[in-house]
Every structure is written in structure tokens, then in C-alpha cells.
Length: 122
Image (cartoon, rainbow, N blue to C red):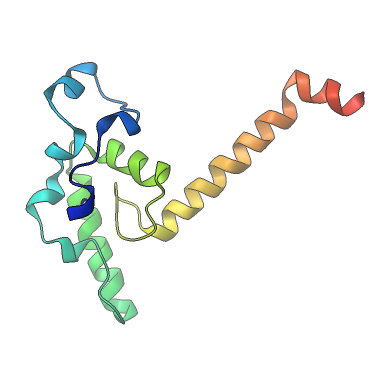
């Protein structure tokens, strides 16, 4: 989800997984469905009850599910990393899990690469 401070975000910071034609058409966030929705749907008000938060997050995820730039939004939120809100169909907690898995996978790949085994043995 975009909120006012990020509306001037540059596309170059986010690797696009879409065709190059999209980059020529403008920044990914200009096509975000959430631009037409209430920002409060994507960000928690202070002291929000758990049941209300879960319902709001599910509603936000339904908006994300129909968004043509969901992947770009998600990657932006993971690369920044965005600490709050629903971005690309993921909550902040879900993004932390994705980032932890990516870090673990990167460490496993480094540990299993031929160069790391030679260095460890030497």
C-alpha cells in the first residue's frame, strides 16, 4: 500500500518482475489499486483490537489480490523494508517471515557453494 511519503518513490530502487514496457509507462505505484482505496484499510490505527485488525488486514489483502502491481509492491516493501501496513498482500509480520526465510536461504546457499567448502577445509 502506498501512503503519501512514498508517492514520489523512484522505480529504479525496485527490481521489476514485469515486462520492460511497464517501466516505460511510468512508476509501478501509479497503477496500484490501493491508490483508489482508503489508506486506513492498509495501516492500523493506534490501539486497534485484534479482531478488527485481522478483519481490516483481510480486506486490504483482497484489494491487493486484484492489483496488477502486487509483486512490485511486495518487493518494494521487502527491500525497504517497510515496517508497517499491508504491502503487496503481506502484513508486516508476514514480510518479516519472508525476509528471514530469504536470509536463511542465502546463508545455506553460501555454505553449500564450492568456494565456501574449500575455505572451511583450508
